[in-house]
Length: 182
Image (cartoon, rainbow, N blue to C red; front, top):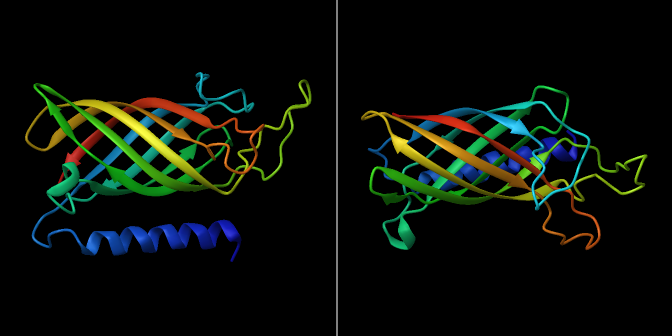
């Protein structure tokens, strides 16, 4: 078993353990979406990657009514162009704002990008700095029926410069996801 496999298995176990705290009679929601991979934003620099990410996840019901009702989630993202794939767990919050809602979230992911990568033109490191990364995200969405909602979302993965203060390209993905309430 590789370190990536071990880290992914650990994240899945953590997500499963987190789901135990959810009310047993309630169901969560599944979601899937398509994202533009490695969008150039002020939070990143060019990693040389591209393509489209297919993302699939499961969001549990809130684990508590306190703290805004955080919802644990688990998800995976596969890149169509041979770029970075990742899987993770986290917590998100849903803030109703009239006909739309805002859904911020934060999590941890493991990825399969190279451990060391240098841009041959700039001689800058473009690897992600560590196998385990932070995953902040934010979405704006609307309920389209009793069970379906749609969201425009931004997902960022990076090491937050914790392991190398001069190297942290990160990867941003921007896309649309469809949620189905079970």
